[in-house]
Length: 257
Length: 280
Image (cartoon, rainbow over all chains, first blue to last red; front, side, top):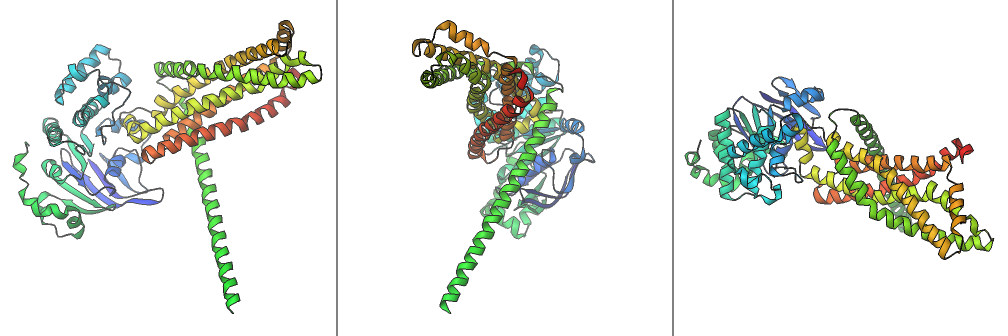
C-alpha cells in the first residue's frame, strides 16, 4: 500500500536520503531504525507528502503523493494517521480541543457530540477524560501526551496506516510500555499498517514484523528479526553495536501481542 | 628571489581572498533573490487564501483584540510623547520667526501624513511582528504546523490569514488613535509652553485636515499592515534550526519589517504626493 521507489532527498543541498526503496504492506508493522540524523523521520514526512524527494517516487495505494493536487493529497492523508515526535499537540488548546481538532474544524458536529467522541477516544487510549479534558498539554506527562497524540490522529483520520515518529523517546519504562501496548492494540483491533521510526531497539523488536535500518541516509538492511540478528553487514553491525551481544536475551514473548 | 617569492605569495593571498569575498557576495545575493522570490509567492498565497473558505472568524476576532487592544497602550504613549516632543522642537523654531500660530498646521500635516503612520507602523512591527514570527516559528519547530497539514488544515489559512486581516483592520485604527493623541500632545505644549491660544491651534489643525493628507495618512497604515503580515508570517513559516532558529527569524522579521516600512514610507509619500498634489 505504501511504496518508496529509489528515493533521494536533499535539504539545502545536503543529502539526507540516498536511493531508498521499500514497501509497506496492508496491516504490516515496519520499524525504521537508525542513529540520529540518518533520515528516519524524513521518510515519514515524505510518506505524508510534507516534503517531496528530488528523485524517485512515493506511491500511496499506487498513486504518487507528490504529483497529486492539494485536494487529493488531503483525501489521501485522511487514510494516514501521524503521531509526531513529542506529540506535536497544539499547546494553546486543551486536550479535548486537541483530540477533537479535526471534528471541530471539518464537521458540523455540536460541541456535545465532539466531547462525547473525544471522551470515548481518550478512553480507548487509556486516559481518563474527566481528569484531562480541560487541561493544557504541557500539564500532562510525556507518556500521556503521546497517547493524546495517538487519540488525536485516530479521531482526525480514518487510518489504514499509522506513522509514529519516535513514539517512546524520552519516556520512562512504564509509559513506554503503555504506548507500545497501545500501538499493538491498534494494529490488531483495527488491522492497520504501522510504520514506526525509532532508535530504541528493544521497542522495535516488540512491535515489528519487519525492520529497515538506515545509516547516513542509506538503507543498509531490510528484513525480519531473524535476518537482522544474523546479519553480517558492517552497517547493521555498527548500529546494533553493543546491543547485539544481548540480542538473544530479548524475549519477544514478554510483550503482549 | 626571496622578494619575488614574497610578492607572489602576497598576490596569491590577495587573489584567494578576493575570490572568497566575491563568492560570499554571490551566495548572499543568490540567497536574497531566493528569499525574495519565496516571500513574493508566500504573500500571493496569503492574499489568495483570504478569499477561500473556510473563514476563521473567531481566530480573526481574537487577533484583532490582541493586535488592536494589546498595542493600544504602546500607541498612546508613543503618540503623546512624540506629539509633545515634536511640538516643543517646532514651537522654539517658529517663535524665532514669529510664526508660533502655525504650529497647529505643522502638527496636522506632519502627524497625519508622516509621523502617525510611521510611528504606529514601527511600534506594531516591533510588538506584533516579533510575536507573530516567534509564535509561528515555535509552532513549526514543535511540528504543530505539520500536524495541521496532516489533519487537512491549511496553516496559511488558519494561522497567517487571521493575523493579516486583523492587522489590515486594526493598524489604520491604531494610526488614527496615534494621530489624535499626538495632536493632543502638541496642543498641550502649544497652549502651556508656547502660549498659543487654544482656538488658534485647533483652527490651524483643522485647516490642514484635507482629503489628500487624510488619504495618505490612511493608505500608509494599510500598506504597512500588509508588510508586517507578509514578512512576519513568512519568517515564522520559513524558520528552521530549533529555538535558536526561531530567535534568529524573530530578529530578522523585526529588522526587515521596520526597514521595509521606512523605505515604503518614502515611496508612498513621493508617489502619492505627485498623484494627488491638487488635494494637498
